[in-house]
Length: 50
Image (cartoon, rainbow, N blue to C red; front, side):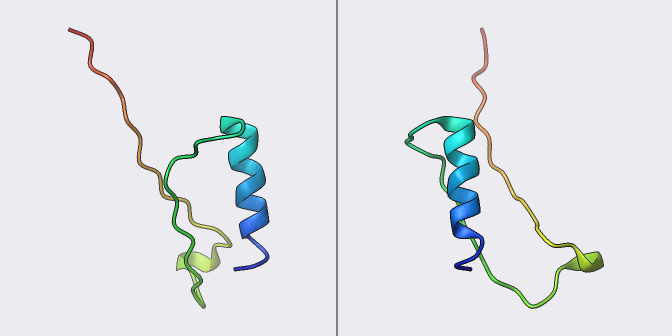
């Protein structure tokens, strides 16, 4: 976990500047599906024009 947190912080800063940042969750697992290295989940908000 300690290896990836600084990387996630850096990416968030590049995408959204100095914050506030969207919520995030970092979970350590022993093995991902198909030997993947990283899995990313996102929740997005979009306004509806009327």
